[in-house]
Image 1 (tube, helix red, strand yellow):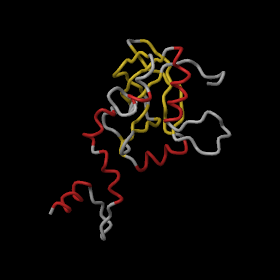
Image 2 (spheres, one colour):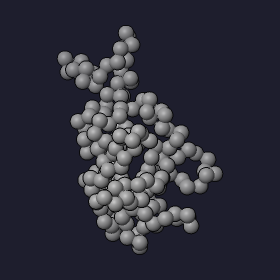
Image 3 (cartoon, helix red, strand yellow):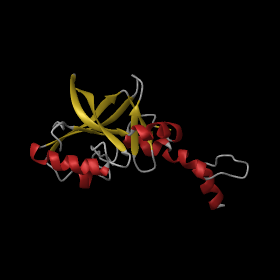
Image 4 (spheres, rainbow, N blue to C red):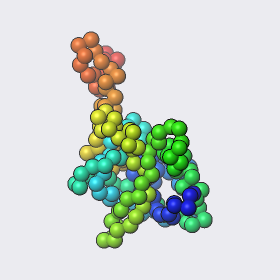
Length: 176
């Protein structure tokens, strides 16, 4: 943790949410308070096969997530673990691009605005993500399985006529 890092809660929206894969090992072992189903406005969620990204959106955009406040004793270790998981390096001289950028955002809880950290697709990745991945209709990772997340991967299954073949079509062909 650098001298510029504030001790703020984290807004998580994907695999770090309760009952999701990374919550158990990256979050659950720390003393913390969790406030679920909070809304981050001004961001869009894009669905990847195993995890989501969020990018800047318009004022009507929203992402549903969980606010996690770590105890002061656990904050620094949790921050280091989350930064590592999300591929974020605070050092601007780091020779590789960040996967996500850690940003401070404002979230409304019970009529009060709260500052929190969240991980947003890095600026080097954001345009590619908007162009190639499916935008979530609900902004809620818990709904991603019903939002046909794999449709954007259909470009890997091109036919001779250069027509996109959906995963359902590919499955049906293999079944016959």
